[in-house]
Image (cartoon, rainbow, N blue to C red):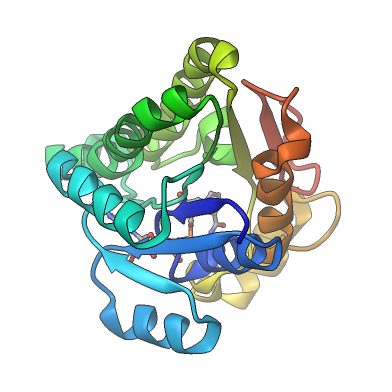
Amino acid sequence: MGRVALVTGGSRGIGAAISTALKDMGCSVAATYAGNDEKAAAFTAETGIKTYKWNVADYDACKDGVAQIEADLGPVEILINNAGITRDAPFHKMTPQQWHECIDTNLNGVFNMTHNVWGGMRERKFGRIVTISSINGQKGQFAQANYAATKAGDIGFTKSLAQEGARAGITVNIVAPGYINTEMMSTIPEKVMNEVILPQIPVGRLGEAAEIARAVCFLASDDAGFVTGSTLSANGGQYLA
Ligand SMILES: NC(=O)c1ccc[n+]([C@@H]2O[C@H](COP(=O)([O-])OP(=O)(O)OC[C@H]3O[C@@H](n4cnc5c(N)ncnc54)[C@H](OP(=O)(O)O)[C@@H]3O)[C@@H](O)[C@H]2O)c1
């Protein structure tokens, strides 16, 4: 088998596309999720990719979860930090809970997962870490001070770890998607989509999850060994960082 890959939030949305693309690339893939058992079971039935449930905001759960996956599949060589949430509100209405939930999942979750695979990657002198940030971490977004802070934080984290991992054969990179055609987007009214969102995207359409997955697969591949600390924007030209 190919390399062992762990995709957080890999059971649906962009994560599901990443999990299946890595499997198609020859990897042994483990996908994690937080609580939606039904979606996870359907994903496993459809793809044969095993799913594991824990909260990435919980350090000890990440440690135990990684240990379980390594017992099942072998040492994790590729980590995709994809799990993420939004808790939108204009700042004057944002509650401490909305702030902390975003930080706990999108930023602390990235620390918790990366910290639990880092030692093994250093020992084996190989690793690929790709974190899914967002266009809104690059440019900011109304009502997303919490989310944008976490996604910008993920970029700073990545640039720092890229420097620490370089001599150990570990690359650390970011993919920053723009608006992607996921369940989240299907809730947006057609008028808002056509008159507000699409006109902001020069290519004139939403991105597809599979397009994000292909960018991730490149950064996760052995071929990408000279690419580290980079942010690959996949946003249809909406924001040129
Ligand atoms: N969709 C977009 O347009 C877009 C644009 C830019 C960036 N992004 C980023 O891309 C990533 C994926 O987004 P998406 O739209 O595909 O998300 P999604 O469809 O809502 O799926 C999120 C996945 O993450 C899991 N998850 C959420 N919180 C978790 C936690 N605390 N612990 C473990 N797993 C957790 C979910 O598990 P359950 O199924 O159990 O809930 C699910 O598998 C996120 O980081 C998001 O910020 C998305």
